[in-house]
Image (tube, rainbow, N blue to C red; front, side, top):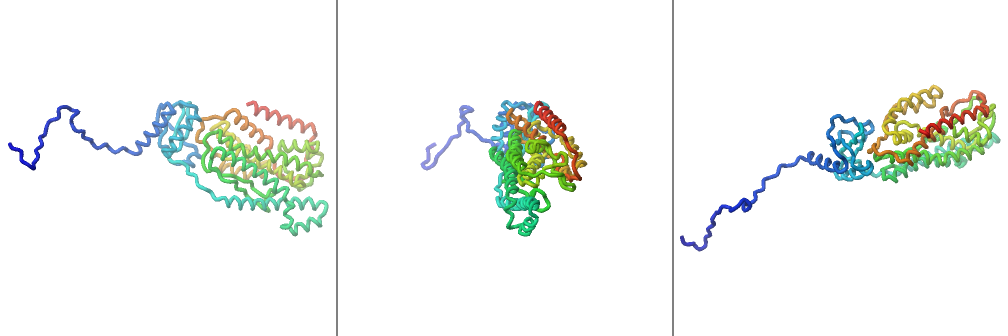
Length: 445
């Protein structure tokens, strides 16, 4: 058949082999995003853990503090044995979880390591600094009033007329309260900045200190201060560093201020109807060192309010002791948890019973018992509870708890009904020996 110009004929030929056939691409099934996420989490986890099982069956529930922070249920849960050191494993896996917008929790259950992938990451947000400044100024004014009141009391001993004139022109005489104001603000500021810089050293999101003014009705002029952590701490090492840095730094200033203040404080007969500040072991030693005997003794006591520095030092010790109570969200609770882990929760009720017992001794403790009942069971659980403290941090934790024993005041601010029962030097020595034996037993454990 002739080939017609302008037309083209094509012949269909059978392929000579399978490879010569044209490739036909079939549409791939859509992958479930949730299944893809779980797969990515499992692959990342397998790099640091020998996975033995997964799923939520038999899983222990999260603590109340963890539930408050994260909420919901984990995206995935894996049980097995870590291939790496726990701290190194956490660092490596957390880098992968950050890309997946998940938070890593590392736990230990029945001798096995547990990895929980919690959805979401805590986002850092800038916080305004002006409320901190306003509270600082208000607290400074509040403690200036207290310090000026102490100065007026001391002046009134020798010159009642001058003291009355000063009280009538209080604002222009606030400078007289500077020794107390600067001392107590130094102690509180050092305490909170110790927390702050320890947290910043570990790159934690933390606020500046919030000082709490309490003018007129408080003999201290303040309820103390606090900082707010905006994210959980990674492990028990960070928990110890942040928790212990505050009280230990504050005590570096409080103890010398107490000794300096006692050196200028007056002594005299115990006055019925007055207020007795109460003794801690360190305060008792400071009085023995300064006056050569324990006071009160033989109807004689030190008038601690006759020295603004002495009152600031004693107040600083009291504030530090309250913070070091080893329960819940207090500094002492952080320190105890970092030292013994989740077993710290077992001590909540025994310590609470002790605090309730102190209420029957002095009602000063009633408010603290109420606060501990409301908030004491919530502990700052770190993301990684497996990594233990090193020897240096373990020593710091024990030292902090020892300092709590030394500065705790069982009976603060009780009313004197007359001359207290005198204590002989022999009785004082027995007291100190018993305290020393107690401290040695704690250190030796």
